[in-house]
Length: 325
Image 1 (cartoon, rainbow, N blue to C red):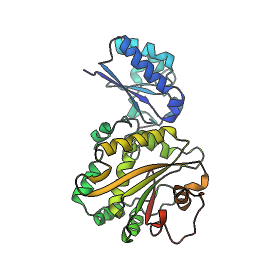
Image 2: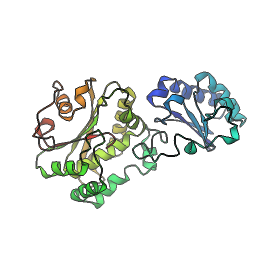
Image 3: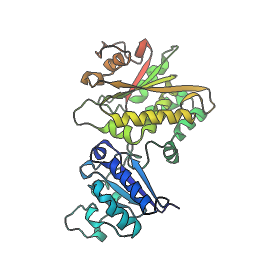
Image 4: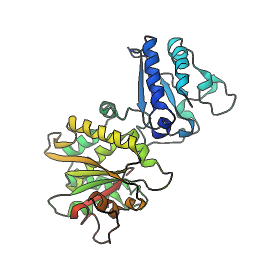
């Protein structure tokens, strides 16, 4: 019987600080102590407190350890999991000298208490490499509802009424963009996710892809249904190896579960996704340059009009949305 769940940040920041070694060492220590069947170790996406990493959170008590090092693992295993004593020196405290009993729960810390997470709702909560954990958080339920209960026009209407705008910076109404692409008749249409995050020090897209890749896949499939597309591409920079790995794992799992590919949910809707790696050119964050790069050419912007919704990837109607969108 599992009595404790240990969440260890598997984002880029904490991974660079040794979180993979921490997870591996902890599993080895738990096995040495005979606790491997009582304590489950899970690597998640980013918690958001990268300066405090590597981060480890133990549930159900919610103990939040920060700046954990691989050499701390033995003490944590023996004290916390074997003897039931919290390792106070590693507990994250917002104020110097704060007593252990006064340390707030993670959700009540200054960093978290004013947040309402939307795009990041599952980051730091689930194992991004396990589709069943995403499904347990109502993952792919929206896709199922859309395919079995709604028409493409109804989906677009919901998007327009939501007021959602492009999160990449331009702020163009997403529902309107989808409507333009849906109105164009073609033998093939495309959905493209722009994950080429070019701004220096901007890692919003990376956090979502590393921590909740299935959310991006599900949303792309919904977009494909809305505009009549059967193919999607995620254009992500090669400098994000963890994001690329988790996307490829997620795509493989979604295909295995019948959530990508042919006849999804038995509705006759076909949609699949491939990953394309960018070489890091800043200009490829511009949508038409990105399309040119996917086509195998030098990433150079094209003149508009025509806009991608009319003539985009391979000359076909295409919608391009940012990861957060």
